[in-house]
Image (cartoon, rainbow, N blue to C red; front, side):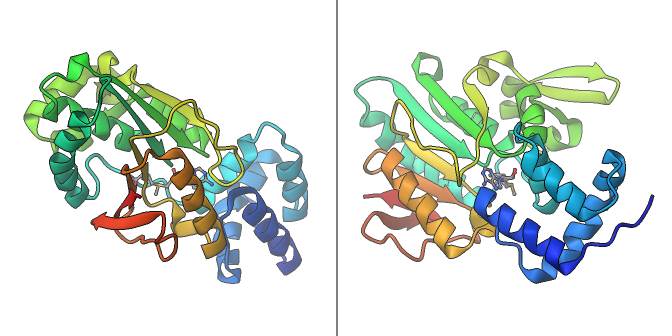
Amino acid sequence: MVEIELKNEEFELFRRYIYDKVGISLSRQKSTLVKGRLNKRLNHLGLKSFREYYDYLVHDESGEELSFFVSAISTNVTSFFRESAQWVWLESYLPKLTASKREKKIRIWSAGCSSGEEPYTILMFLQHHLSDFDQWDIKILATDISSKVLAKAIEGSYEAKQVESLPREIALRSFEKLKDERGIRYRIVPKLREKVTFRLYNLVTDPFFFKNRFDMVFCRNVMIYFDDVTRQELVRRFGRVLSPGAPLFLGSSESLTSQRETFKLIGSSIYQRL
Ligand SMILES: C[S@@+](CC[C@H](N)C(=O)[O-])C[C@H]1O[C@@H](n2cnc3c(N)ncnc32)[C@H](O)[C@@H]1O
């Protein structure tokens, strides 16, 4: 593989473009990371310089290359039942939510869903804790900017070691065992999969137009990449699409430093839309 240099002025082009398009603010120290993670891509595309790659990126109207770039510089790390304290909190909140509903309808958004563990965990959780789960009309919108992770999420099949750590009762009801060229895998059962709609969606630039307000929004470990201005704007927009009283879940290392008139801290990185 040919090692291609990333000049300062080229890095600057990427830095500005990525900030405008995705809200990710790349510090100048990230130059080595960008160079290291994208060298293979440039070689694969037969490009000779990062300037050529920049032109390729900005002219790709499909958004696929942007999606590739974001996957290369950010992390898609996720897992089932991540942030355990939040699930404990949700257990006590659920009876209040269901009691407040005239129609048996719940709408949830997993924003930055990565490979699907988060939206599927929400469903596993609801199936386990709602005795009349089958009578509820539950829909989850799960979105991410990376088409690569979304393809995994849509398939909904996971390695045995990811599933073996789940409580047995939950795993048995939620997965079917299958074998393919990758070995033994566990796929989310159709009954749960069909409740999730996966969409390629950029939280920074795509419009927030939704038919219904959401009863919960999960946007965990996504805003870590954004600067303050982008974060605040995103949270303001979440405020518009959440029902009054509904919770917004952030990652455990994330917090809201503004919007106190719209959101109140009610649990571990959980904020209530006032
Ligand atoms: C670390 S993962 C978090 C997954 C999951 N929410 C969790 O906490 O386990 C962050 C995800 O955010 C996505 N992401 C980053 N910037 C985004 C943007 N502007 N719009 C939508 N998704 C974005 C990434 O592609 C990645 O899959």
